[in-house]
Amino acid sequence: MRKLLREIARDEQGMSGLERLGVLAAIVALLIFIPAVRSVFGALYNATLGQVDSSGELTGAAVAMRGVLITVVAIVAFSGSGYLILYTNLGKRLAFLIAGAASFGWLTIGSMLFVISAPRGLRPANLTGLNAFQIRIPAIAMTLASLIVFLMFVVALDRYEKQRSDV
Image (cartoon, rainbow, N blue to C red; front, side, top):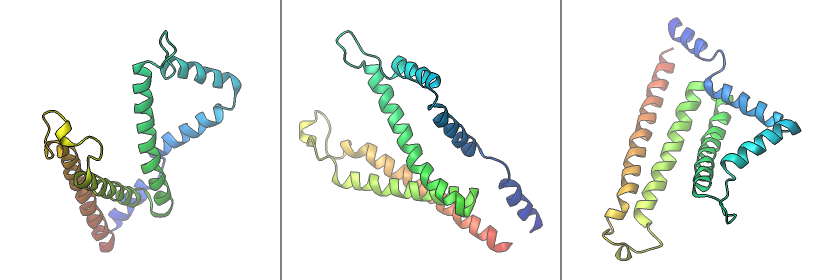
């Protein structure tokens, strides 16, 4: 019992990698207010995400990089904000388990709805070589994968609760 309490206390000390990343993001956000730093970030943006071709249109690489960046930021903001709120009240471990179970539970439900109701746009008859089942294979795979990970989080939560009740 004392060993478990020492492990929990040791795990709750110090900054985790996620906390370090949050501090770094806050420092960068504050540095943006300095004009010299802002010009460096502006030049970096123009060199990567603001590339245009001779006609003035964004290049395919710039559009792709913007899409990847928006996707990553959206995922981090979605899961990170929930984790942050849970972390302040529950601690590292329990917050991670609850946030993971909630995220993958939501992903399971969303992908299951996609399997049932998609596609709304082009009908499978208009897509060359794909029938109604084949067009849903990626969504079915996502549903099964997210369901498996969700169940793993639920089992981990159960083990965590049993471990806590033994103390």
